[in-house]
Image (cartoon, rainbow, N blue to C red; front, top):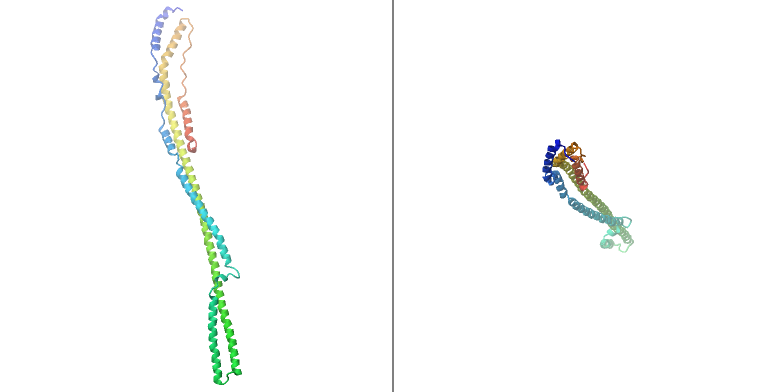
Length: 318
């Protein structure tokens, strides 16, 4: 197709501009590379460091809970031993009741004491009998009825006194044994009460250790949940800041890319215009790639990163 005379100079000018533009390489470094990637925000760095520090943070609480659990088991074992001892004490207390309860507390030397006492009593009565005989001899009634009556009365009184003395000693021994049995019963009841109180104390101590174990678990869960929420908050806010920075860098990148390709678009439009003026068919119109919303794209990526922080230690999304 022949070029009209009035367009020859214009076509030559276009040819020079196109030659100059297309012969020069595009410096892609101006709109590509790491300089257009936003770095990690300081709050994200802090969140990552906090998450690393939190690994294994439950161990001290777990060890404390295990110690409390062992102490609780020990206290329960002592309580079980105390319960077993209560039965023996009850049996001993039961043995201290009833009609024959006094017998184990009777003195093994009581019969010897009674026999010795009665022997001395009998000896003392023999002296009395001799006095009656001596008095009868002096009065000339020895062997008479009066002596016999006096001797009979004396012997009867002696037997009565002897029986009374023996009964008194037996009653005294029985009373002492009965008193000892009653005291033993009271002592057993007191010992039972003390043992039962010890049992209740051990059970209460076991419960206290159990509560301590649960509190340690609760502190561990609270600490990790609180740490997770801190990590989540720092990570989310840091991701928002990173998204803002990435949006600015992406906008700069798009501006640099647009500037680099602007001459080609301008020449394309210029050439299509000349083609139309010369009666030819214009080529495809050059269209600059539509720029996306840099902040929306960056925020979408940042939201995904923030979600990872939200899953650490069970932290909730804010």
